[in-house]
Structure formats: structure tokens, C-alpha cells
Image (cartoon, rainbow, N blue to C red; front, side, top):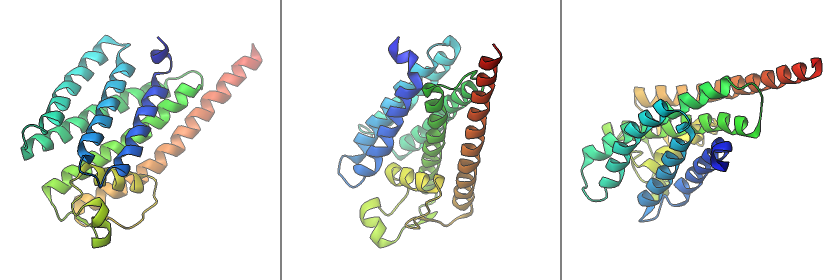
Length: 224
């Protein structure tokens, strides 16, 4: 019951764990296993978020179970196509969960810590989704991104690696733009532009929406 009451705070904690672990273990031999474990924690925490509605729970499980099987199955069967499909499955699952959370946030009648956490969760999901897509693009076209030798020493020479893709995604989302990874082909450049623009637009709309809800709630309280 406590976990359901603070479901978005718990999900935010899981996402922050993923964001912290991804660069921390990127240069280690067991990086992928650690990152996959953190992603799995996010998956299961996200399922708890949608478990209050039977339909959403069933759809979430249908999307999650095959994706996790593929994600961990890669450890046993080193097949390129399996990882490619698991990345696509992760994109679909995260898009589904993020959409449900965004709708729930916009329908909120009062601003609480959990509401704020929900809004941040959507923002982080957007970064995760773009990270998965960058990894997909990097696997389709290994030359889609330019990575200098100095950067490749700790990020690898291909953004098809999920930790590198996540790093580039959040650097782009927050408009830091370090320049250590540069999108080269048209799809990569367009996605990077879209992520940077939508990330800033989302924050503006989210803040305006939450402030509006707070003002509306305060006015109702004063009138009563």
C-alpha cells in the first residue's frame, strides 16, 4: 500500500538509479549486466505504477515480459537481432508507461510530491527512450555518430552501446552539448534536435501546468 501511495517517487528513484549507474559502470567488463539490471528494476517499478488498472497492467506485462526475456536472453545467446528487438521493445514499453504517467499528471487536481515526481519521471523516460533509439540508430549505421579517440577510450567507439547512447541522450536532453559525441547522419541529427527542443518545451509546459493546478487548488480553498 505504501509503495502504491508513493508509486511515482519510487519510480523516480529507480530511474535516477539507472541514470547514475549507466555512466558509472560504462567502462567496466560487466557494464551491460549492471545496466540491464537497473533497467529491469525500472521495468518492474513501472508495472507497479500501472497495476491499479487491470487493462493497463495486462498491456504493460505483455510489453514487458518478452522484452526482458530478450534482454537477458542475449547473455546466453549472443545474437545481434535479439538485442536489436529488445531495444525496440524497451522503446515501446517506455513510451506506453510515459504516456500513461503524463495523462495522469495532466489530470491531477492538486499538486503533491508524487505529482511532481510523476512529471519528472516522464522527462527521464523521454531521455531513456531517445537513448534506446540512439542505440538502434548506432547499430543500423555504425558511422551515424562521430566519437573522438579520447572519448572512445571511456565511452567506446560505437554509440550502439546502451551506456554511451544513454549518456549522449541526457547530455542532449539537458542541452549541455559537451561535443564529445556528434551526430553525423540525417536521422541522428534530426533526433538530437527533436530531443533537445522537446525537452525544453516539456519542462516549460510541465511547470506551467503544475503552477496552474496549484493556483486553482488554492483559489478553491480560499473560496470555501
